[in-house]
Amino acid sequence: MSAVGVDGGPLVLAEDEWTGRREAHRARVDELTGPHLHRQAGGVKHPVVDFLFTYYSLRPAQLRRWHPGFGVLLSGPAAAEYATYSGYVEWAGGVTADPGLVGRRRSMLEFTERLLAGTASRPAQLGCFGLHEWAMVYRGGEEAVRHSGVPLRLGPAGTDAVVESMNLRCTHYDAFRFFTPEAVGRNDSPLRREDQVGREQPGCLHAGMDLYKWCYKLTPLVDSDLLVRCFELAMAARELDMRASPYDLRELGCSPVPIETPAGRAEYVRAQSALADRAAPLRAELLGRIRVLLAVES
Image (cartoon, rainbow, N blue to C red):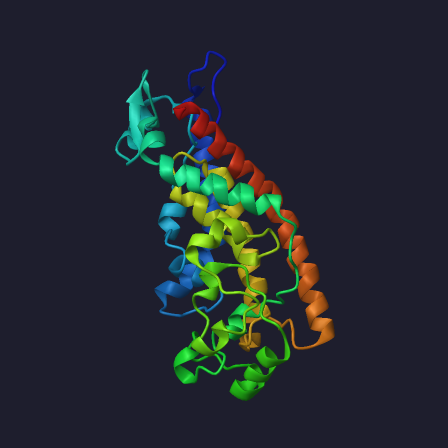
């Protein structure tokens, strides 16, 4: 965790302490990403998990690299490794995240602060039922099916009928932008990138998943402990996302959440609410990290 020493300088970590943290982090990431890497080596695709390394741009090897976060100085000979990494500088006999990064990434810090604070300030909306994945294939034909080789659970006509039977209430632009043209006009309101800060809300699965993205975009200023916890949340949210999708993933061990039924919608809302509760403290932690960084620069 990022911290500052009692004299206002970096918190100094002895080599045996920080290398222990580094090894624990590597073991944790290896456990989380091992199955994916094994499948990848064999050329086997997984429509649920692969998303975490394709849509999100951080690779497993990058996730595995431990970062202490801003305001921490790594001491000892082993710290020389970090001096070779982008975003680090040698200082006072050790290596630390470059304070100059705060200024260079200020616009991203300010945007992310506004986005996270705005999201946290709004009540959770829990009535979307994960229909964004259905809207991405609605009346789109074979070319709209995003996971080749995975059948639609209800078939094309049945999938279209579900979309037509319920309101689309997506609030997340980065899901909405993948809607088929026929689905765009069915959303409660059109979404634009420039409205993102004013529209995101904490019940959205993707708003919770994106905490992982904001963490890694701010690496090495944000510590790896928070990054991995946000990754674990993203994994859980992605699983619910695809279980509630129109795809039949039972061969992968993903039992469907049949949102076309009242019982399935109730199950989805319960799981969505639990993920929103899990995301809230992570969002608050990341927001706190960002505000510390902005205060350092001001």
